[in-house]
Length: 247
Image (tube, rainbow, N blue to C red; front, top):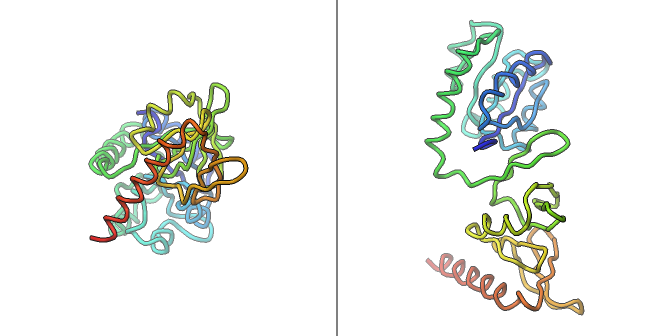
C-alpha cells in the first residue's frame, strides 16, 4: 500500500537528504514524513511525525545521532538506519540497537538490502499497527493513523480529516470514506460529517439541537434523522467501557 510507513530523514547535508529521498522513491510503501538538519530537530520531529524509521546521520551539529538515541531512549525510537561517511562507528551503532549501518555514498543495492530487512521488521509488527490514511500537506505527505482522526467533514468531492484540532484535505468523498471508516467506529452525525464514536465525550442539547461534544473540544451537530442511531452507538460504547472498568 502506498505510504504504508513513514520515514524521517536526518542529515545536516542537503545533498545527503536528497540522496535518501531519491533512493526511497523506489519503495512507494514508504512516505517521507520530514527532514531534519540536526539532532534537536530529530527529537522534535519524532514526536510530531510518529515515524516508523529514521535514516539518521551520526555527525550532526549540536546533538549527534547517538545522543538522539540516548535522550529518546532505544525503547522509544522507531527503527534506526544509520547513515555516515565513516565506518568506525559500526559497532557502537549496533550496540545502540540500530537496524542497519550504511556508509556514504550508498549504492542502490546496499540500500535495497537495508530496506528488505526494514520491511520485514515492520510487517512482522503489522498486526498491532492501526490502519492509516495518507494525506497531502504543504510540506509533503503525512500518514494519519485512523485512531487519531476525531471526525471527518465533507468538502465537495473531497473530505477534511480532523485530528487534534487540525484539518487535512483528503481526496476521497465522504460517501467513499464512510464505507472504509465504519469498521473503525465512525458513524454519521449528519449528512456532511462522520464522527469517531470513541472521541465523543457527551451528547448535549441546545437551541440549535443535539450535538456531539468531542474530547478535542469540537462540537458536531447530530441531525434529527441520525440522532437515535448515533445515541445508541455512543451508549453501547459507554456500556462496554463500564464493563471493562468493572473487571
